[in-house]
Amino acid sequence: MLMIFAIAALVAGALVLLPSLIAPRRPTPVKAQAFECGKDPIGIAEGRFAIKFSTIAIFFILVDIELVFVWPCVFLSILMLGFAYMWRKGGLEWE
Image (tube, one colour):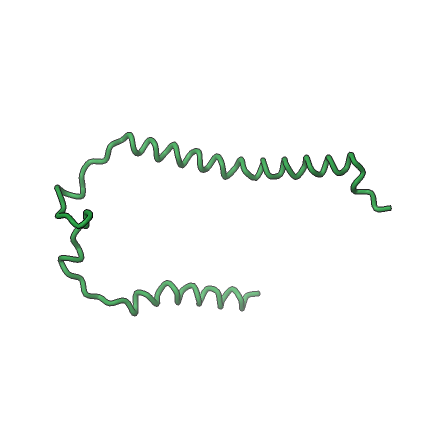
């Protein structure tokens, strides 16, 4: 088991480090420029961010976290209902 974990860690490490070793390194000012649909950039990229978008993002994260905790309960409830139905109908009798 420990050997499998070590091999998996080595493969994961190799997959993370290998692209940085073989990737071409030729940075140019053109590559560093912002790209806006083929047009020249307008203004600076570090503009102010509207707070209304961050509240929407926080709401999305809260709903997402809520669903992570609710879906397993829903799934287990459906399983329990099916189990109770089979028990009441006698489907679990091994005669």
